[in-house]
Image (cartoon, rainbow, N blue to C red; front, side):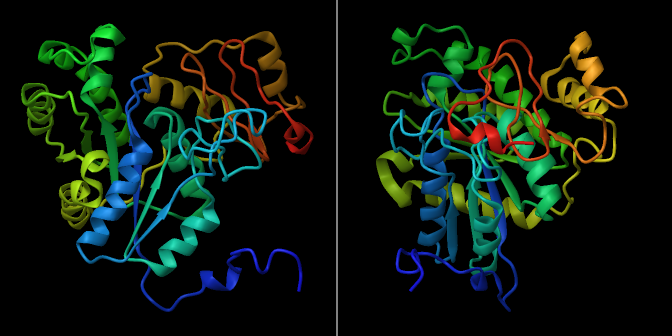
Length: 335
C-alpha cells in the first residue's frame, strides 16, 4: 500500500458528485487588532449553527498555523498558512481550492474564511481564487466585535472591559469601509458581532443600529459561550440573506489588464489611495522586457498592515515598504 493511503487521505474521486453543488459562505473580518476579531471562532460556530438547523454543512479552514518559518508559532487554526499557493504569510488565510470544491460537491453549505481583514485575504479570495477556480459566494459574513471597534475608536487596550458606546461609534468607520469594499465586488455582507462577556447591551446596540441604517443584515454571534446554539441566529440570517442575493461576483480588475493597472485599482478601491507612485526599480521590472513584464502574472496583497504583498506561483509580490518576504525552504519554489 502506498504511504499515506491509510492516513485519513481523501482521493480526488470524491470531487465527483451528481448532487447539486452547495452554497459557499465566506467569513472575513474588519481590520485586525490585538483584541482579536474571531473569524475562526465565528466560522466554526456558523457551521455548527447550520447543523443545528438540520442543514448539511462542511467547514473548510486554512492550514493550522505554523508561523513564518514552519513550526515556530504553534498549531492553532487561526492566522494560518495559506493552501491556495505553495506558501503564503498569515494575511491570505485561505484553505485549498480542492478542499472547497470537494466540500461544495458534498454539502448544502460550505463555510470558509479569509483574513486578516477583508482587504487582505478576502480581496485575493475573490480576485484570484474565485476567478481562477470558477467559484462564487452565496453570502459573505463580516466579523466584528465591540472590543475591536473600541480599539479603532481610540480606547486603550487596558480599558476595553469598560462600557463605552461612544468609542464603539467612533470605531464604526472601519466597519463601514470593509462593508464598502465588499460591495465593490457586487456582494452584500452579513455583519456578525462576535460577543465577548464584557460587552454591554448599549455597546452592541450601537453596531446593530448602524447596520440597520446601512441596510446590512446583522446577527449576534455568541458561539464562544454557547457553542452551536450561539450560532443559530447567524446561520438563519445568512441563509435568508443568501436566498435574496442574486448578483454574480464582480472582480475588481480583469486579469488581462497590465500589472500596474491591477495594483492601482486595488490600492484606490480597497485602501482609498489617492495616488500611486513607483520606484525606479519597479518601473524597470514592469517595463517591456523587464523581469515582471505583463504576461501570465497575477498580483496579490498581503500581511503588512501598512502594505500589501503576495506569495505564490506566477503571483507578483507587491511591496509597500520593508517586508520580510519569506523564510524557510519555500523560497526556491516560487516563480
